Image (cartoon, rainbow, N blue to C red; front, side):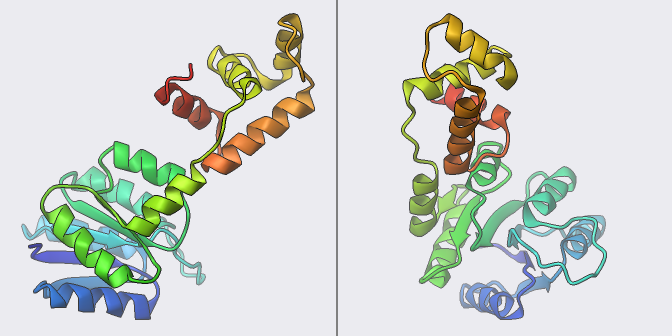
Length: 221
């Protein structure tokens, strides 16, 4: 089992709960911090001292309490930590939905486990610790269901025409003319923007590039 664990969590009660779960599994060498900058500093210091952490457990969202911080969220912390210690295991423990980014980080091997803060999250954290220790990835059942619901979208032919044009490098403003040339209706700019915004909202994306990459991965383009 993991020997040395760093917990980045800005809510004290949640932090104590995570520590108890770790102690129940026989993991006693734990350190907890409330700020992402502090977490990265502890990681760097441990590497310098030749006593690296085996595991980072972090939330995604950290509240702004007017204390100046360079790293403001857990996902940015993970990326910074992986730059200095690529082999560290990472479990995300959160109540927030950032499904698109989390899926991307799973694919890039930056995250090993995801536990959603909800009922039975203590049990799910135990399962995550045991699974990730065995070099396998873990998503708690409720987080899988939540992500699947967030990522469900039934693409229409119109949607696919729009995405294909984006893939071909056609800007949104140019799309109405292309659609009209191909006798595709509707073809107004407002209709295009509405469908693009709907697809991105449902799938949890913020950029058209993410939507195109998702559709390419699904084999739509």
